[in-house]
Length: 404
Ligand code: ADP
Ligand code: ASP
Ligand code: MG
Image (tube, rainbow, N blue to C red; front, side, top):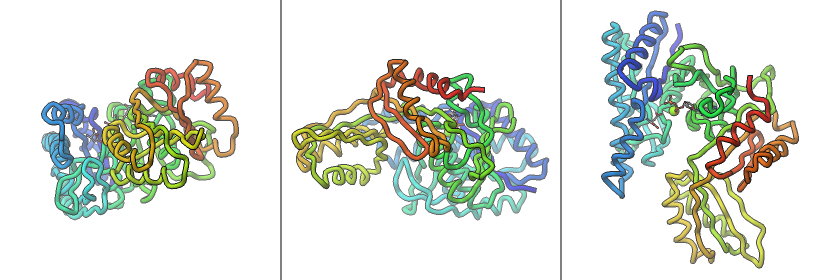
């Protein structure tokens, strides 16, 4: 008998039929003799709809209230799923994140889990009831309701799997695993059988949104095996596991893309120690996650610094940088939200030179201009015009022969 955490994403619980199909799968898991803890996302596009509604009602959108609003989405799915389970003869019980004991810090809209007290879930399982937990939410140490950032139900699932000592955390979604590129953009993308935590971290960090980045970090740190699979076909999908010697190390494993960022440029920055420190400390204090940073060679003692930030953070990044202009003696702040990032990820890159050259040649052959470049040991990313990114993904997928 195993303990499984099964997480179902938005499309997987998108309507009444889908919820019944999920209930049927959970009932079968129970009949197999396995224990299961379920985590659900909000139905379909509910979270986006609630965000739009907030935007229609308010300019200010206090983050505490935004969290209160968004957590309603997952409550709907958890209650409906327990009802559907009752029809299957499965005794289940729903819990909000707070009831499930998911304790977070107080950073509204992107809170971090600081502790998981799973007592009520353990009690439910003892009583032979299936706990169904609302994903993406917790309660802060100040007892306010928080959310974990977009895609945060994955993080809930992994955190519960770690706390309860689950044998595996199954992430059920609308594709059958992790692919060599987003299958919506590259139909011939290949499903990967196994991916190391290390590669998956870079895939998630560079836009492969099939798993939320935090969930992969959590799984790696707590050694939770992850299985990403389809809630439509139920076939086995992709295992995210620790790297081992026997693992095939492709030079390039996946091409990813990210359209969720914007570029900020601070011009006329004096070229002297401490300026970048001041700017990026101020952004960090506002919880802005800065990504690619480029600083030009200075001409006449002044330079430009460009960096990318999540588009949701653009407005207050501009405020932060703008307010610092007099202090750092820079000229002006510009923004550009028409950018996207295309990346190559592969553990074999560490030992194979020439990947960047082929990447740049491929983009050049398509006349796609590279505006920024950043690299890690196993990833190369290029910022390009947003309108060209899908073409870039397809071209790179073909150039590196990632298809079947
Ligand atoms: P869920 O609601 O189940 O959490 P998401 O929309 O968050 O689903 O994530 C699944 C989506 O991730 C897929 O529909 C797919 O379009 C997208 N995706 C992006 N990159 C990849 C990739 N490399 N492999 C698989 N899916 C990907
Ligand atoms: N419903 C939330 C979102 O859309 C959390 C999740 O689906 O994981 O981001
Ligand atoms: Mg998701």
